Amino acid sequence: MALPELVHDGVNGLLFQPSDQTSLVRCIEATLSSASLRERLGQASLREIQKHEINYSASSFEKLYATFSSATVRQVAPNACNNIPLWSTGQCLP
Image (cartoon, rainbow, N blue to C red; front, side, top):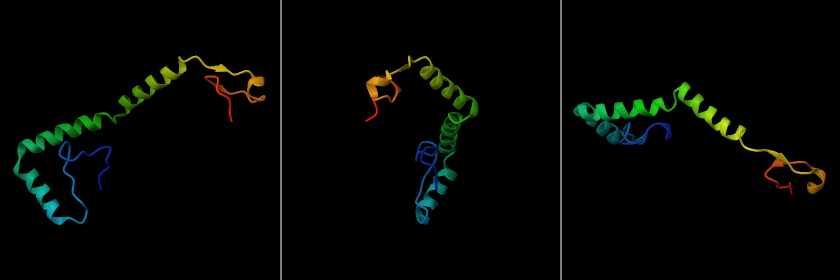
């Protein structure tokens, strides 16, 4: 079973149903008979894997945190929310 976030049929891999032996044979034959298919799938897989590389992921999270940390956060006055302060854009808890 492939992870749908990582393997995209015909893009960076060939998918088949676990119980479908005929489809598995077709995928193997297609891969063995076409060097260009192997090259295309391999290159696409490398690009996909790079998205999940630790430095890339860490950089993405750093940018996300920077976006949130630069946002203005204010506390709603306690009396406005029945003495329940809420850090938000001014909405009170129900």
